[in-house]
Length: 102
Image (cartoon, rainbow, N blue to C red; front, side, top):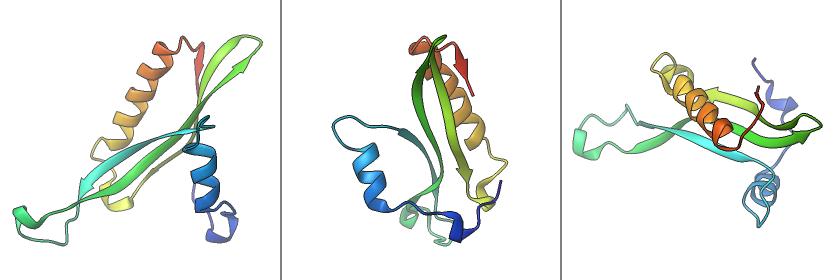
């Protein structure tokens, strides 16, 4: 799903407070890739090319893991990064004894 820039209302400060404080409300997995602009292999630098924003919640049925956002830069799609995040989150859901991953 594409999001219009005007639809994004959160701020960096919101993410810092809600995700990186003493009691994080969400977690994030990052996909690291290499900057394709630099030609020399020694000069290549890694960049964030995607992410999965997720949290664990509780219901009357037990714990669940919810993937809120999965984003991969267009030029890096089709290389398995999104699949890797999904598999990692499935493994995390098992570790947390979640009854559902959605």
